[in-house]
Length: 130
Figure 1 (cartoon, rainbow, N blue to C red):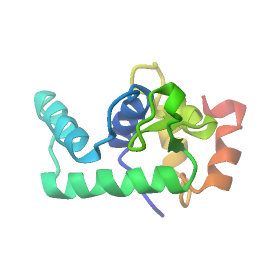
Figure 2 (figure 1 turned 90 degrees about the horizontal axis):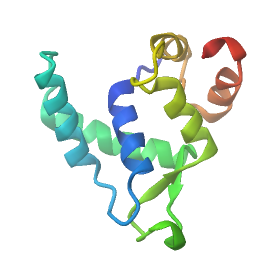
Figure 3 (figure 1 turned 180 degrees about the horizontal axis):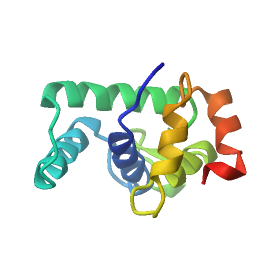
Figure 4 (figure 1 turned 180 degrees about the vertical axis):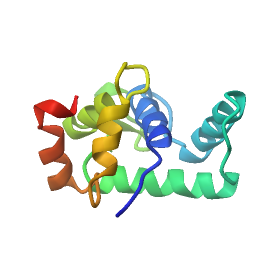
């Protein structure tokens, strides 16, 4: 069973969502994530590992069509992304600013690989997940 750092993925997806006009840089986003964890008094993973994981998540999210290259007319510069419909659904499920996001994260954690596209689409389409 594959486990994901949903908070880090959420941060990356928010950066994609707000990334028009600037390059997507997962390593600094991992640093910001670590700083936010420390500020909340939560344990902080080893920073190099977190940076590596952020880069791996960028590739995974792109390869599995959660994000795609941002078109030039939307501020694309060849180094940034937009959320796909699948990515927007993922963000809406795991967004910590939405009350009750723990249940969707728990359901995703129960899957063999929650970000495998076919499986994710099936799980995300369930009305009881949200």
